Length: 388
Ligand SMILES: [Zn+2]
Ligand SMILES: [Zn+2]
Image (cartoon, rainbow, N blue to C red):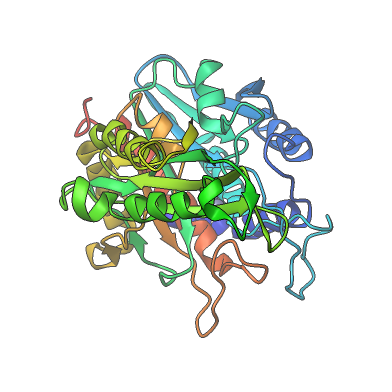
């Protein structure tokens, strides 16, 4: 598969640069999904459009078992600061997370697998809006699932480019692989008045100070140290001038967690922190916006990736993950069928090109490698050593 993927390397680069020059924000991927539908259709795939709004599902083969391979297609609201012949043509929008490469590689996989025979179905999930939710706070993966994209799927695999890992290496391991994320929005309600007479007010700043201390103690005092997570305050707004105590202060933030069974506990502890407002004479309002669950890499899916990648790259090029609590809505797919995501080394040697930055870029030599691993995963999934 690696040789075959190298055979289409120019095509992969052309596709990736085309998407890079025409980035589109979440749920606005109309040009991208037009291209994807056109290309997969010309390869002989069955193509379904409008899956999760701007998503595309393409299929090769027939019947079960079904392996799903996923690529996200959305870009970020950033102004590209690179200088080369394929920089973004859309002002203020940039593929700074590598989803242009993901889309190009999955098209490459379809190109390679269209020439193969296998006993089952490969379903290509071209997903919109991994980065942001829609007006209801729902991102692309759950939107696609609601439209039936995961029906009958036995295993789901994806990759993400990784600018910390050299080309030719991948990272994968079983277990929690990214953080679950929810947002919370609170108000501390006091009673405003003259800043010279605080005893006649209920000062929402004073109350907020206590609430923020309590929020910061959740992960040191209230949740087991074996359940890693984070509660962070991301915004705090209140008041208009120096000598008036306002009626209220608005505080919002994020929470991240790795074990689904502590999510409820963290919500309850955030609520307890805000309840401090009451004994201090004030009140509070609090609401949560539920985000994506933690991504779990399932052992059998990791084994498939390790076997496929090991045969192409050599065992020594499969590294362990460098974990963080960044969110990835692929976890929604792997809640439904066993799944795993691996990180594909795309580091540009001697240069810092990190994700979500205006200077992000990848070493395109990684494109055929990612393509080959995904295609190899699909074929080995159907092989007799993987009877799921
Ligand atoms: Zn991202
Ligand atoms: Zn991403």
